[in-house]
Image (tube, rainbow, N blue to C red; front, side, top):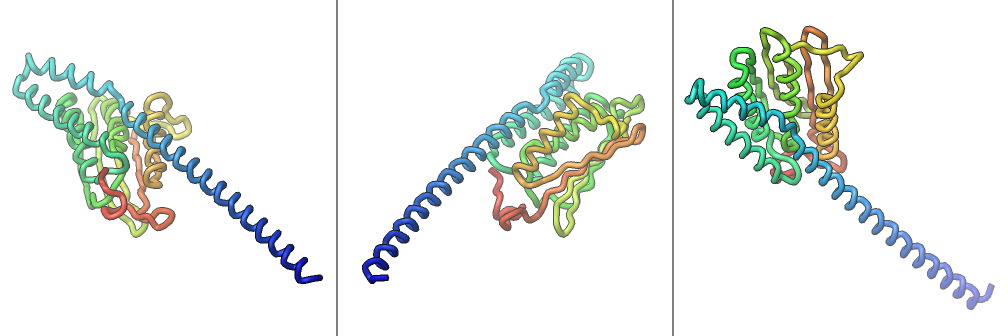
Length: 248
C-alpha cells in the first residue's frame, strides 16, 4: 500500500472519528436536556402534591375555633395562635425547593398534633422519642402520615389512643417511625381512597428527593406503624446532611 493511500485511509478514519464524536456529543446533550426536563417535571409534580395536603384539617380546626369562641374563649385564643404558627410553617416549607431540616418538620408535626389535641382532648395522646433530627427530608412529608394516624387510627376508637413519633439512626440510614394504637387494618385488604393516596404521594416524594422508602405495618385492633427510611448516602456519593442538601 502506497504512503498516499495510507494517508487517505487515515484521513477517512479521522473524519469518521470526528463525525462519531459529534454524534456522541449531540446524544449526550439531548440526554442532559431530557434529564433536566424530567427533573423540572418531577419538581412541578412534587410542588403539586405538597399544595394538595388535605384541606379538611383546616375546615375542622376552624370549626373547632368557632365553637370555642363561645364555650372557651381562652382556648379559642390558644387554638388561633397554634393555627397561625402551623400555617406559617406550611408557607415556609412550601418555599423550600429541595429538602428541609428534620427539626423543622418535627416542629410542624408538634404544632399539628397540638391543634388536633385541642379538638379531641384526652382522646388523643402523643409521645415523642426523638433521638436525632440532624438530617433532611422533603417538606411536609410526615404530616400526611401523622394525619392518617389521627383520622384513621386513634380517633376511630371510642376511647382514643396514643400516637408515637420516633426518630433514630443506623449506620446506613435515618429512620422516622410514626405509630398509633388505633383500630389498624388487615394488610391483606389495605385502605384505599385518600389514605392510600396520601401514603403513595409521600412515598413518591421521598423516593424522588432523597431516595427514601416508606413501609406500613398494621394489625386490626392493634394499630399501625409507618416507617420512613432515609439513606445517609445516596447514589454518586451524595449524603443526607447539611453540607449537601441545604434547607431550600
